[in-house]
Amino acid sequence: MNAYDILEDVETNNGRKVLDMSNEKPVFLIFLRHFGCIFCREGLAEIADAKKRLFKKGAEIVFFHMSDNATADDYFEHFDLSDTEHVADPECIIYQKFGLAKGNFNQLFGLKNWMRGFNATMKGTSFSLKHIGDAFQMPGVFVLCDGEIKCSYIHQIASDKPNYEVLSKCCE
Image (cartoon, rainbow, N blue to C red; front, side, top):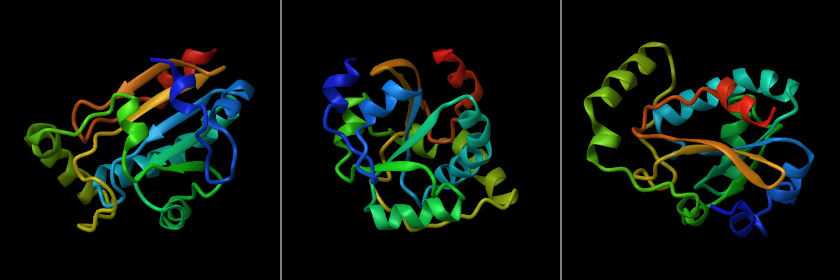
C-alpha cells in the first residue's frame, strides 16, 4: 500500500499534513472504533499511559475517528490526550483505504469480546451504549516513517490490544 497516495492531502485538526509529520518523526496512525465502544475507551486510556514513552522515543500520535472534531476533542480531553492530533473520517474512507474492514458478527460480538468487555467494565472502564460512528468498523494501527508504512496492527476482533512498545521499535 502506498501511504503517499492515501495521505497526500490528509490534514489533522491542527492543519498539519500527516505525510509531512512523518518526515519529521515516526507517526502512529491510530484508527479508532466508535467512541461509545468500551474497547475504544480502554484503548484511549492505555494510549494516554503509553504516550509519554512513545513521545520520549520521538513518535507522534494521530487518531482517526468517525466523529466531528468538537466531539473528538471532548473525548481526547477526557483521556488526557488533548495534545494529540486527529483526523475526522465519518464516512470511513481513509479506514477503507488502509484496508480496515467492517467486522463480522464474531469479530464484534464473539465470546472473547464479551469476556474482555466484562473484565474492562469490572476494572472501571466507562461504558456507553451511545456510539458515534460506524459500530461495525474495525480499528487498526499503522506506524508511518518518512511517508512509508513501516509496520501495522490490524485488529482481528474488536477487543484486540496492540502492543505499542513493539510497534514503536519498527522505526528505530
